[in-house]
Length: 283
Ligand code: GLN
Image (spheres, rainbow, N blue to C red):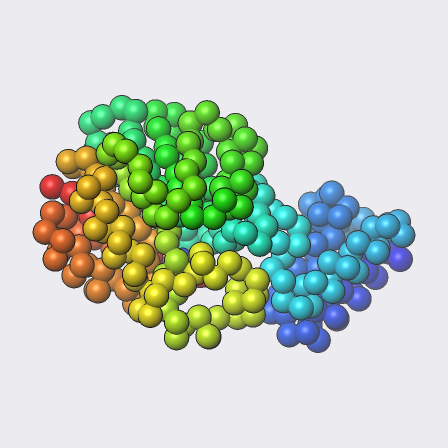
């Protein structure tokens, strides 16, 4: 079968299954099998697939038909222009999380200490810590995650990006009994409320790790604990930078104020105009 014919077959299958972007998904899957980019794939539309390539492609299309995310099928997702390994033990990095990385990079010049000591809580695939490490040399990063399987993926990603020497991982809940203090605490904690979870598309709800998504009844229980932990783990003048859900700005700003020691509370929107990152500086 030719590349073009396989793509047509897959697009029809995926469209019938209700997949929102059938052509893009089919092309991305086939690109990985043919080890080509999309332009090359389309230029070579009349080339034939080997039997093995065709068998693999059809298996992958069948998985996508069941709503498995493309990133898990191909084992890879791009974030911060880097390629990350992903599997079902880690949340797939989202483009809007690049804003979290940008905000950390934006506050770093306001910190006098070098290397800057950074703590990431809930590292998952390691995307945030790796993006920070490749963006700036003078940084010492500690990253925690409750899932040993996630930490294994994150470690692979630090090696892949060539920054393994600058990120230390610990398996444990939130602050994982760490010693010492940090200049920045950054986190994309689980923040989906119980009610919102039920409305998520199958791709997310059935395949991504619930422990990376569910943030308690209102979705902010992890933020609440991180805000409390920041009082102990942030050095004076340090920053807390967290990703949030679109409706969580106000309750979190209130929690930060009630905690007593945070100032300069601000929020940044994502490109869809939703509140996405909350920041505060500790006094
Ligand atoms: N943004 C993710 C989603 O839409 C949730 C990420 C999280 O809970 N930290 O599914």
